[in-house]
Image (cartoon, rainbow, N blue to C red):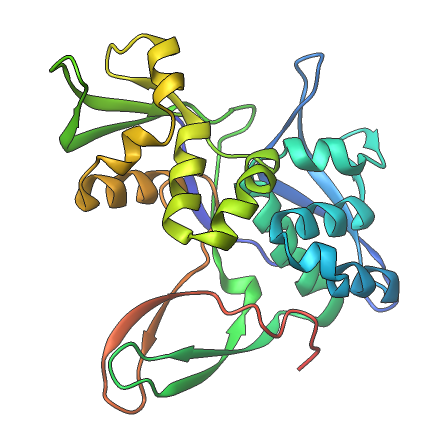
Length: 268
């Protein structure tokens, strides 16, 4: 079992400094089996802002993150100028961690955010402290283990076999880019596509049968089981926590929201 510990990761901003070293929650495993956990980022410039404004990138958020990080990553471990291919290989947990730290080193930790209450629709304006976001990271030298999810209802195949133990790997940047068009068309279909790409085994179902069924497996799962898988892939593994707890100032309801990034390029 991986020793995953929550922590807060604060960056000390030195005057005139443009390069910052950051410890990744997971790290990059190179072709020689070496694990690289230390990344060096530089502050965003006007050229990087243009990447985010490019309409082609705006239609694929995952590709935009890849291009932005590829530009701003100076090195990972002893790999200088890692570029797009390595950024695509990074686990999603590391990519979003780097994205938040990139914003923090460029503009500082405070970011204006707004959350609409699902009950009264009132906008709740907050100042988010990016340095205070919880980070779960693996122990030294560890890599993420497969994610084993035991479902309540499970999946029944056409032969009448019942499968309730699913095994997944953690998603990467490549996975995010591949499913982007599906997400854009239908969020539920995009979620199915991601789960299908990351699925390693479905009970004792033969692998070729599992791969042939693809997203059809997840279409047939109950919403409770789908939510259980979603939590396992997005909330229980290493990385930065983008889920926020908000108390509505208007009606008092307590609700959960995803970190608002609409002011990502704003210094206020």
